[in-house]
Image (tube, rainbow, N blue to C red):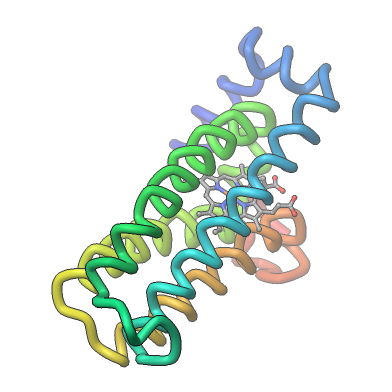
Amino acid sequence: MFLDFATWLGGTALSVAFQSHTWLIALLQSIHILAIGVIFTSMVIVALRVLGKVRSDETLDVVWARFSPLIWGSLAVLAATGLFLAVGEPVREASALSFWLKMLLIVAAIAGALMLKRRPSHGLAWAMILVWLFIIFLGRAIAYDVEVWGSWHLGGA
Ligand code: HEM
């Protein structure tokens, strides 16, 4: 179903326009990667504060208030650039198991970030660092989906 939709999307004028301007894809990827740096370092600092490793002189609320605009702002940039990247190569994304796992983990990471603010715990702080690392790995693994997942690649190995 998703592959059919992706095949249709890949033939639309918008997708063809993206495909024929490779510099635009490179620009979107660069912005995507910069935003990854911002969201990851911000989340790690919040997690380290929960673990008591940094900024112990400030409350978690103060640290959260400082970094949450960076976290939500860069997430919005990631969602927007990611969406355009997906429109540019819809079949490649829809057939990549890494892409779908990454989307699932992003939902889990958002829920975890909200929970970390309400009910901070050391276990959740470590889990958040791990989940964000997995998201970054899966983002890069999209380009190597067949090599990473073999026959689990959704487009067939
Ligand atoms: C929020 C929605 C997001 C969408 C729709 C999205 C979508 C995409 C797409 C379509 C690509 C191109 C993959 C390819 O074809 O090679 C990509 C690359 C990537 N994404 Fe995302 N992404 C999102 C968020 C994130 C987040 C939150 C992270 C990590 C913090 C992330 C990490 C990466 C990485 C590491 C790459 C590989 C970049 C490269 O090496 O070229 N993405 N993403």
